[in-house]
Image 1 (tube, rainbow, N blue to C red):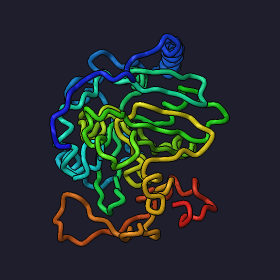
Image 2 (spheres, rainbow, N blue to C red):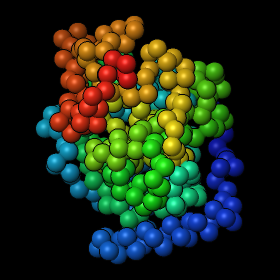
Image 3 (cartoon, rainbow, N blue to C red):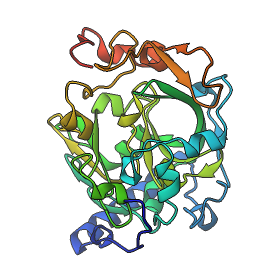
Length: 320
């Protein structure tokens, strides 16, 4: 598994005539949206670069940014869960160096008026990028504080005009065992799939991410497009997204299929509901002394004020 891999263009990057027609409708719609909002679309120098250069334009969203000190860039880019590149925390950085994240397309499908394949540049338009400093909590009881760069998922969803039947949003990661050596192993049922209820997806905290620490996303962190849902465990924040589908029924998701007794669909950070093999009551902040005392885990990862109403009257031990 730990070997160099080839770069190639997958069949998913080829656009059919019907999809191309839908794409033209989408671009016309987003141009109108940009005009109404008074927001300029990204210029050529603002498009996704070939390498991990700095993002030229972004603003700090103070409303959603923590006052806590952030982890270092090295912390966030060398200690990762990204099983497509291996199961060790150091594997993603080691084995994703040749991963090709440009050109990149995302297919929109299901219960939406606008469907088709769109380039990463299409997806970015007309959204101005912003920085939000979020807690990131992993189910293995470790955490970080990271300045993510992106834009609200709700804004993107509204552009595709989901129908009244769209109750869930389903995300799919690229499936490419040549570039992603971890996918050669039957760790999970590839490709990786995750999902949210539509109201969770539309919550203002839910972020489509294209960068961190003022730079475009490196491969090991999910280049070129990933999700961050800060009140949920990290496995919900799917990486290297190539598909967004709107559905009426709750989707089957990768970890819930692999171990349903350990990984629920909701995966809300809850110190009162233990993982079957360890407690979730405390967490270890990456980057400090390994022997330092663990810190108390906060309900909903500290975002209860913003999201607890989404789960009112739900049994959180059952719907974990």
